[in-house]
Each structure stands twice: as C-alpha cells, then as structure tokens.
Length: 206
Image 1 (cartoon, rainbow, N blue to C red):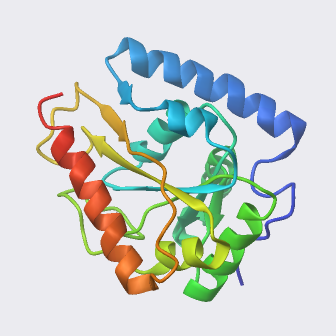
Image 2 (cartoon, one colour):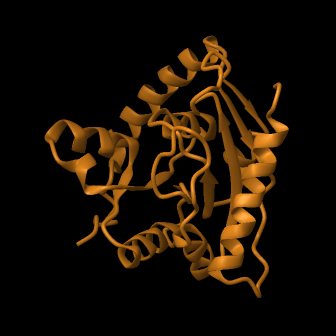
C-alpha cells in the first residue's frame, strides 16, 4: 500500500500551504543569513510544472534546502515507512510533503499522479541517504521521467556530505533537460548521475 496522492495528502490545502510558506520562508531566511547560497536557482523557481528535480542526498537537511531554494509547492518522493511510524514523524512528513515509498511500482505510480496534477517533484536517485558521497543510483527516478515525459532539473548539494565544510552550504542547479526519446531506464540513470557529478565538480571551491 502506498501513500494516497489526493489533494489533502501530503500537506496540501490552504492551511497547509500557509503553514509551509511561513515555516520555510523563515527557515530560508535563516539559512541565507548563515551563508547558504543557490547557484542557478531561477530554473527551480520559474520552470513550468511539471518537472522532476534529481539531486544527491547526504542528510535530512537536503530536502529543506531544495524547498527553500525553489520557493514553490513541490512534493518529495519519497521516504521509507519508518519515517511515518509516529505521530510526530507523520506531522513532519506532512509539512515537508513527503510521499511514503514501499515499492517501486507504487513509487512510480504515485510520482506519476503528482506530475499529472501538474506538480514538480523532488526525487533522490539513490533512493536513500549516503552521508559519505554519491552512492549507487537506482532506476526508479529514471523510470518516472520516462513514463511521464517531463523535464528534469539536476542539482547538487555541497556541504551536507561528510568532509564538506558545513558553514558553506551550496545548492548548484543545472540546466533543465528532456531525456533522449530512445533512452531506457538504465541509460537515463547513467545520464542523471553524470549530470549530478558534473555539478559536483563545478561546485568545488565555490
């Protein structure tokens, strides 16, 4: 069983939207005052929905950084059932608009439903956190993109991976692109990784 993608789940509605705006507005301001910088963030703020954001994932903070940079409604796909195991965790997941993930089939279906609204979504191709650097990519994110035919915006977060200077948080946003029509999930997954790795290299020293 996977999370419903009805309009009231996760974290939708006027009250939820107002709470998110005020919460992440305050968090974003605090982060910027503490040195957080976004390179190329206009694409996240102005690209027409729907689209898929793909990014490395080293820490729970990553999702908050992307939300604050985008300054728009988006859903995060997704999190393991353990993150919904208590009332406090479910409230946090609702605020972040995180979709619960239990299977590849359900994940692809729920992502497709969100994109059809249309709504941007954030997917971590590693399908989990890797604090020490980029881990293996699964093909789930690529399958969502291929099934929906939407654009992809690659991103790289510097500062949350082990060994990085956490006082220099950076989100580097790449150019939106659409995959080659001849691509399959395997080749597109390789392309996603290459684009994210290129952003990682370009962020060195920034």
